[in-house]
Image (cartoon, rainbow, N blue to C red; front, side, top):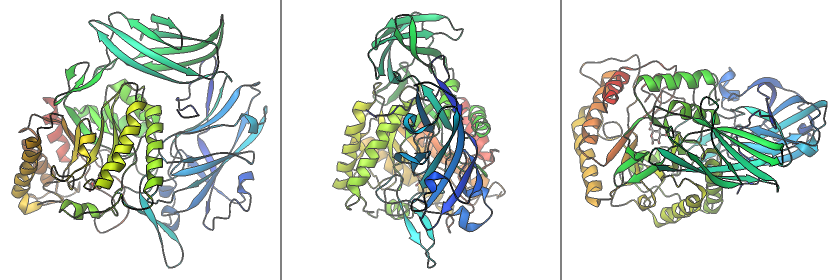
Length: 598
Ligand code: BDP
């Protein structure tokens, strides 16, 4: 178990959470001299930087936008006298790694750019006084860290990120920061799982604390009425006539957890709770024992100016677009998103495939073309693998710890498009899956998204998955444009070979799509035109509808998004069904119509 709490900060009678979002001081550290010059005590020269935001797109020059290396943030905050309470900082994430200092004192180091950084700063802060937090961050990529990539050095010595993945290496403090105070004896974590009993439901819970006092659990309905109560750190809340959390029809209770000493409440944590079960039976995905066909998208956290930062306005618009188009699911490709995405999905009744940033596990982004035509793209034979595996397992642990209580999360995806055809790949992922299985109290299905090189006869990794997720581009990377009729035949051929394996598990398409310019129309269609995207989808749907083990379609991508520059991309990846500013392309209407009745 993690030695820190990833529970989302809340304000209750026993806890306070104050946002530190706003303008922070910011400085690049090109020469890596910040530590030797004691920047942890305060940045000598700085600019103002919004938090949360990626730093890249707020600048107007190339060097700043494409900066790769160390960079620093600083913020002063006032801490009221909070007695002997525990004081913590919680960053939703810092990309890709950071060291946190408070009043010059080093507090913690965190690796991985898409999960919370939580640190106990009790011994470093002054009460009733101004305190200073300084963050040293770094956004370099390597083959030992997630996501995978490398650093390229220009002749001038300037460093550039070389991602092995197809999204811009946005970095910075991209999610909200909270100053948290809570009792020394506190609730650090809790688990829930559900059992449906006719019209009733049992909510089994377990609460983790760092003390000896009793735990008390109360479940309240939407109106605030208590519907069940239980004493003890482990127990069951029996709910009569339970309102279930249903797909696109969510009902949320509130779980109130307390540590009590007689009548005195020592700690109190509150969180929404949705009662639902998830099960895979044969080729069906069952939510509350009812089959669900997944309709929706692979997404990105990506928007103009703010880059990968969480923003409620953008998130709200995305959910409105997904509701309008009749979607019910998305995958957090290719990294765990900000907590708030899951909170909104819980409210709106969306299902989430929650993905770890295990992306780029082929030697270069371009290798997917080679792999797609049968080439072998070594990855798991190198000496960086032990370190990579250690980071992979740790991030899986952090992701499951953070997201396990969200009703929206119905599955964890442990990779995207790695090399899977070698014994080394199998052994690597076996270790990841073995580490992940015991971590989820709800035993949700585990999966990963497979690239075209993961063919039924070659892939060594698919037996580890509880259901299959395929990323397939028949009609785009394979037999695109004038050859599209071949694409359909080749697609059917592959699906027939999967069918022959008789795996008896659901198959979900987690990627399929075409780059499409919102300005380009052409009759008859050509690649990149809107008409082509529409036709491509129709052909893919006719294949999907021919196999009853296909239980979902998440197109690539919800919206156009930024990538690294290059000859493959015109100001980013244009496979969005919506433009980057969230307006529909014509295929949005094709999907809306299909998903209305699916
Ligand atoms: C897949 C990747 C995804 C890319 C997509 C594409 O999983 O990140 O953006 O292809 O090429 O290989 O558009």
